[in-house]
Length: 136
Image 1 (cartoon, one colour):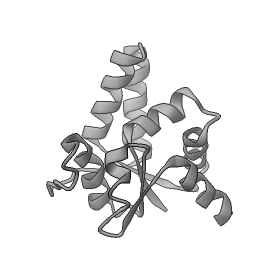
Image 2 (cartoon, helix red, strand yellow; image 1 turned 30 degrees about the vertical axis):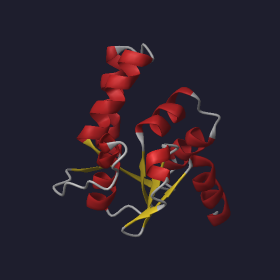
Image 3 (cartoon, helix red, strand yellow; image 1 turned 30 degrees about the horizontal axis):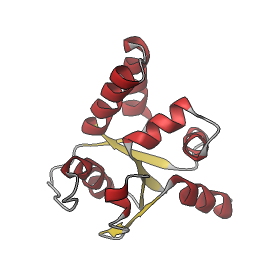
Image 4 (cartoon, helix red, strand yellow; image 1 turned 90 degrees about the horizontal axis):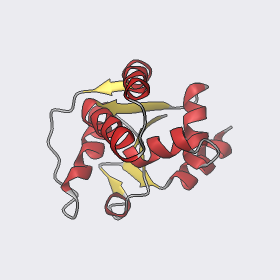
């Protein structure tokens, strides 16, 4: 199952591994899901971790390389402007469309308001974690 985790969920999974986002990252490590990511998402993740959470530069660089290697790295060519209230959120739609993802996992109200985009369901991490548990 291919998914896109928004930046906040990647951070939540890394910094708070006992929550729903941490459970999703653990399922990824075990091979149960296939994350789709773009360089734009990785850049934002690295910037937020180092600027807002005082994450060390070496740790952020290691994380960057790990994500690029272990996730499906896509280079979106289509520009999608479906999130009028926060155009920066388009990077998640673009990555999901380019990578053939079935889900975008987010708590972002602008993304969640869409509910679905081109058959890609947009759901909060708790709901996605329930789906994973039900399928196993």
